[in-house]
Length: 231
Ligand code: IPE
Ligand code: IPE
Ligand code: MG
Image 1 (cartoon, protein in one colour):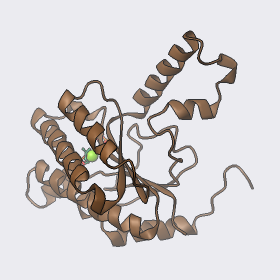
Image 2 (tube, protein in one colour; image 1 turned 180 degrees about the horizontal axis):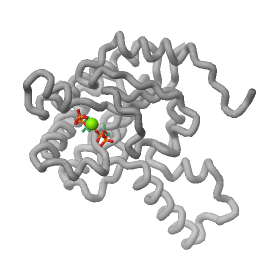
Image 3 (tube, helix red, strand yellow; image 1 turned 120 degrees about the vertical axis):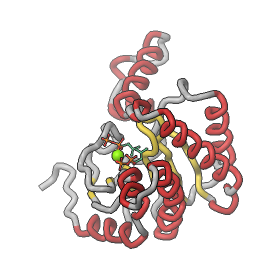
Image 4 (spheres, protein in one colour; image 1 turned 60 degrees about the vertical axis):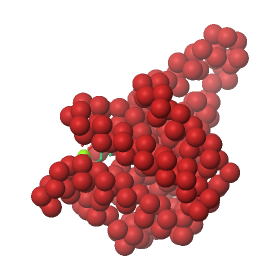
């Protein structure tokens, strides 16, 4: 059985580049190219949802040229998704904070989401300018506004309500989280959504993470005994 939804923390682009004597930006380019390979393999295997961590709300503190490179790669990726929508048959969604991204990028995000909205073989959520705490704060504000405007009763707020105000609304929670490159932490990723997820840590840096590595993660997932609080 394959998991329905895999979330990935694509880490190690910089270290991969360093190990090859290349600039960090080369690691980001190679890492971005690997998304396509892994997403295609997942689609073939019948995985329905993939959520990838591309840029965190904390990543703005990196050197400006690196941030600029990551923004440029997002733009390129969105343009490609738009152009190849028909061929890829993947639905693209971008999760994360929008209001402090440039208008140009916001528009590209909307265009790519719109152009791919009719596909459902694989839903690819790109977490860009994403932080889980930021997402929960934005959801809390939106809930508060709706309560203040009388659209929502405080007594009716439950777990489903909060889920439906998150960026990931309409998408089931991940079953398997993969973090590459040896780090074993969440770095502010999907804190609410990963409540019962299985975690898999790989030492392979993201640009070198292969379809074989993906299959190893899926195999280990299948050998786990999932519990959900039961005995
Ligand atoms: C992951 O690789 C990509 C982003 C965080 C944008 P890193 O850039 O974090 O690479 P390392 O962890 O420094 O090797
Ligand atoms: C997490 O990686 C964010 C992304 C993969 C986009 P980082 O490399 O930024 O995380 P930390 O700083 O090592 O926790
Ligand atoms: Mg890193």
